[in-house]
Length: 79
Image (cartoon, rainbow, N blue to C red):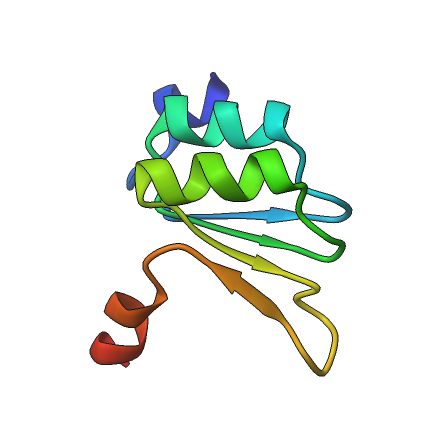
């Protein structure tokens, strides 16, 4: 991908403008990204894949009640 060849630092968060499905989560896992934020919902399969691979996902990121899946306790402890 372009980002791996041209970026000075590896990306740490992927921001999605819609839903997070299994196919996108599989790419996140393959790229080794630790966090994903999506404006819409995440599918059950995406949530399971995130849990299995230690990826933090925030669904409904722009709303009043975001949903978190994954190792969010690590993020809270570092804040």
